[in-house]
Length: 103
Length: 430
Image (cartoon, rainbow over all chains, first blue to last red; front, side, top):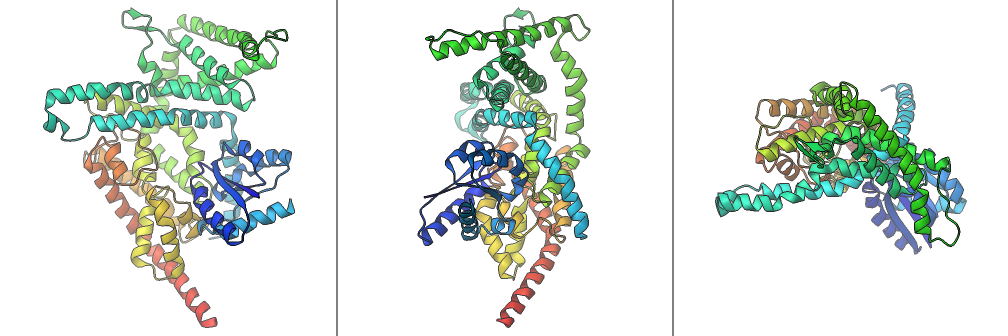
């Protein structure tokens, strides 16, 4: 079970990605829990996640989240803006998987 | 566009965004407003219902007045005293950030604010004027909540607490452990109140109002400051940084208090004093597809685009765009870092801001009535609701869309041509 957390300003635009990513997970036959939250809820929800992906428009939050991520020992990254704009669930899902693999 | 210059600008903007967004006080302020938001929206919905057109004709004047009176408390208990919820929210979030007992943060912030508030209305003592708890009281409320929460946490950290012996229920010992920090904090505010009563200002309220609130609000209600704010939001977004979350956290207290002045006047049936308000920006500039008013951009794409890439982006973005979520078009078109997009991206909102301002100034379009419409409300409907059920509010939004459409059109045509040609060469190559 892969637990992937997305975060943006209010969890709106990242939630568009969630359904597309779930679809990608299904196609690849990987069991995954994917959810999107507002930036302020992210540190709390990170406890339940294997990886955190940040919306590119909130990339200035990376430093703050990195501190929490390090404590919890989970990887995090900013979502590639092009994949974000195209709501490319597959690309973002693979990005998340790669991050989890790498640890 | 020179990419080195762009990189340098991004290097300047990133730390600003980081600082503003991660600033402890601004974070608490933003989250404090979020606490009040559901209540404000609730109150606004009932204002809209109470002022629906033609009801007075339908049920008669007398019944209409009764109807309005019956719905009155919905907004009086929420929208009209929004400052109260913001103060609670900020106090709570301030202490929560520090890992303290956040509910006491809310309590101490409210207590401190009430100590500073003169509990007298005309000749009647023992009342709390609701005006002090409205958006008008926001400025003092925000400062008070910041300071009260900091002092509270300071005394907690100094271990100035009463330790209960083991065996005492934890909820009992917790309330005792906040006793001294709260008492010290509130005593300090009491002293401040007493000191001010000996000055010519008499109350802290008067002092804040004269020294900070009035000049700042006057500045914020003007067109130049508003256009600069809009431009800054657009510049941040151009670099792919969330502009509103950065700029609005600073300006929201001003915009909300201007909103409140209009709301009071609207309720009283008087002329609305302000053009620039929270809803001026949210409904007539941002709320037409999201920042940059990209709904009109999407329409333009549907009209002219021949390239597959652009049509795809249009299709992907329209669903969320109707509800003013527009990251797909900002990152997908893309608008960010796109030299072809920068001119219409920066220009359109500024032109729209100025046009809307003058249209409202000459009375062509109605001023925002102070009703808070959620930012996800689709365009046209939001214009109607924000102006207190006035169809001209929707018309103004239509005009704004036409402006954005026109400004973007030539630039979109060039972009589309580029995409189309590269698609054709790619096809030929394969």
